[in-house]
Amino acid sequence: MADFKMFCYQCSQTSQGKGCINYGVCGKSPTLSRLQDNLIFGLKGISAYLYHASELGYRNSKLEKFLVETLYSTLTNVNFDTEKFIKLALDIGKINIETMKLLKKAHIETYGEPESVEVFTGTRKGKGIIVTGHSLKVLEEILKQSKDKGINVYTHSELLPAHGYPGIRKYDNLIGNLGKAWYDQKKLFSEIPACIVGSSNCVLIPKDEYKDRIFTTGIVGLPEVKHITGYDFSEVIEKAKTLPDLPEKNGDTILTTGFSLSSILSSKEKIKELIENGKIRRVFVIGGCDSPTNKNEYFRKLVEILPKDTIVITLACGKFRFNDLALGDIEGVPRLIDIGQCNDAIVGIDIISSLAELFNVKDINDLPVSYFLMWMEQKAVAILWSLLYLGIKGIRIGPIIPAWINEEILKYLVSEFNLKLVEEPEKDLKEILK
Image (cartoon, rainbow, N blue to C red; front, top):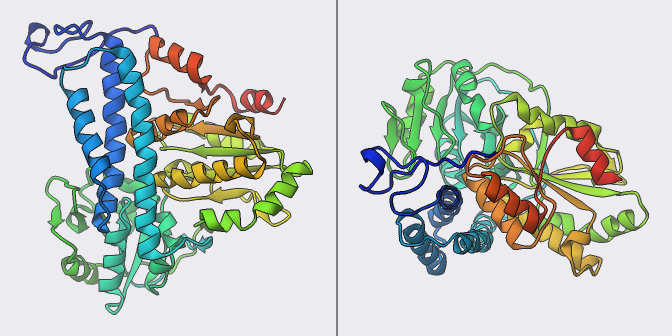
């Protein structure tokens, strides 16, 4: 962590014409360069959420103006004040909350309030289309256009929570969810003879085995892959008809998703009673982006050893590390609560805020809640700064440390927000529950 090097090639004045690696020719420090990188990850997340909201006709000029101004400040050498960049990161956290609220409003008003539902993880005999990414709009259009064509539709990864929305679940040709986090797609898509549609980020360069049956749409693009402009997926449907039938196969497990704010708050008095009586000792919020490394097995180990008087609220693709575990319930309150995609962090924020109000707690950090964030990818960065903006302290991150964090930045985050790096599940759990 004592590495104070950088790499910047944002202008033509780069060192030796190749890039500044120790200190910017313009005067930019390595720490400032890393903060700029952090802000770019965060702005990417906000941009993704705004894009999906705009797909459904929901726009906000204030949020878009902030995006433009922050990009200008971040990507050009007009601001060299490190403290202002910290403040700007917290501003990104605030704006990200507003952006997630806008997208959640778009989803609920378009598809209804999510309801908890069990999701099949196998295949049904017949032709198939797999939709991956995050776009509910793309998924519904494919369901709508293929419903009378004898085509079964499956979700992958971050579209698992789509099954909770009544406006999506109403389609009989929505069968289930295949695979887990984003990085399993090359193996999964090679093995299953279905058409694939990439609806947003987290789509990988395809292997030759399925390059001729994967399509992109919207802002997604892959080399040598057919792109669908607009929402006419007839070409995808026709291609699916030419492919072999998927076999009849039961999945290894049934996943539960779709817990909404209203469904959880409907049990708030019961939850309050269980907490006051010591039957729910602590709530663990565990989410973020999964990474294709063994290090993230930390989270499965953590959830496996959690006492039976604890509850897990989870979201984003990181949940696939442990969402197949049967944790049971506490007097009817599920111990594993999947609230949705990465953007549904707003639901988690609203749940925690409601708990604070329910217990008349002025400092949100006094609640029996612990926070864990996985790999700091673009959206998770924005969510981290949202939590810090709200004043939440003691968040644990890791095991993979964000590349934009150096020793100086880490020292600041530890000092100001009591940020912690995960160590071993047993050790971290012991410290939390002591």
